[in-house]
Amino acid sequence: MEKIVNINYAKELEKRIQQFQKEGRFPRLLLHACCAPCSSYCLEYLRQYFDITVFFYNPNIMNEPEYRKRVEEEKRLIAEYNRQVETGDFEGMNSDEGARKIEIIEGDYIVSDYLEAVKGLENCTEGGERCTRCFELRLEESARIAKEHSFEFFTTTLTISPLKDAARLNRIGNEMGEKYGVSFLPSDFKKKDGYKRSIELSHKFDLYRQDFCGCEFSRLERESQERERQEQGENGRKHL
Image 1: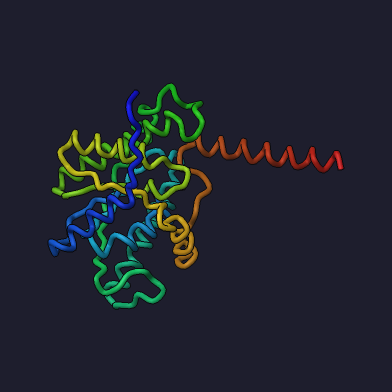
Image 2: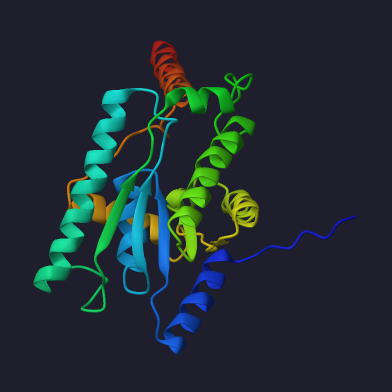
């Protein structure tokens, strides 16, 4: 039987950062971002050690107004972080004068690319094979862009979510990195209270926080679950 190795991706990232610090360098990092709230902690943490460019590539967001809202929130957050660097005002932040400015690349928003990737898996529950295909789509494009623009590393904010499997994301990231010849930076941003910090930063900057991952299938599943909870609550009250 194949031995299962549990990897602490957060510690692996710390080891990489310590090595970069010893070498006195700031590698160029392409950070795939799903939304501003998830980006908030990742950027606060990473901008002291990397030259970061955010890659906003999320064709899984099937509602265009929702997509536009999320990408504009991402740009607003980055502008605020860059203002801090310009003014040196890091009050309330876990960053200091070592923080660097952040760039952004907006990827192609083509919903049909996502629909083709998950074809036949529309009825899968969230977290299943449909999500795997979605991760593959977004991380492959991230690896391609990272290679095209000569980034040393790429990674994703997706590992900050308690609902996302960091091992699966790191595996896919490594596979795509090998395919395109660029290194995937290991991460599990939810560790060390990363997710908790992202909520704090979302309140601090009044960021729009969505209640579903992005795709229409996820939204419909969430709405169905909410209806079931309401119906169960009503039935429970009837029997009191």
